[in-house]
Length: 130
Image 1 (cartoon, rainbow, N blue to C red):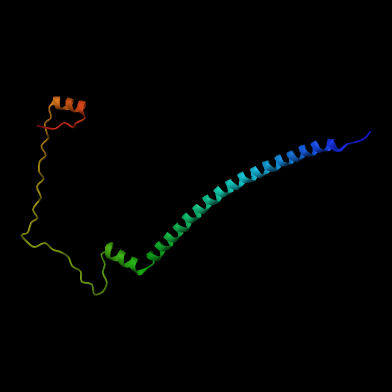
Image 2 (tube, rainbow, N blue to C red; image 1 turned 90 degrees about the vertical axis):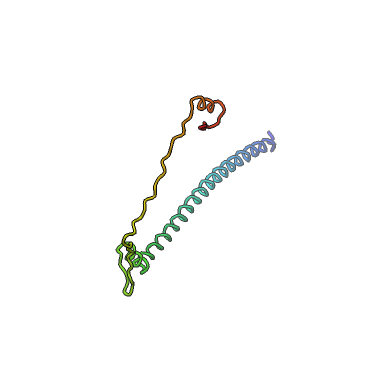
């Protein structure tokens, strides 16, 4: 019996296709993993950027809170204190000068007839008093 090489070729081609299919499936799974990791990296990068901005803001607030300017602001505005050499001025109203209240005008309601209300429902026009 003579063995010819034609029986090996189709087997090798089928094996080659099978290996190629497995390689494509592995490549596809690796690409999906790459996309997932890239999205996670962008999310972590955004959180780190936010946290760094928060840290810088807090460091700025701490630096201001420990400065002399913050102490002066607190003393002047909340404790009504002054530095040496400051001249405190308290405004006093002159005698006999009473402030006049501003009169508020009375609002008179507009009288709208029933037929004007119904007409405004049909023609999309706000009702107006005559």
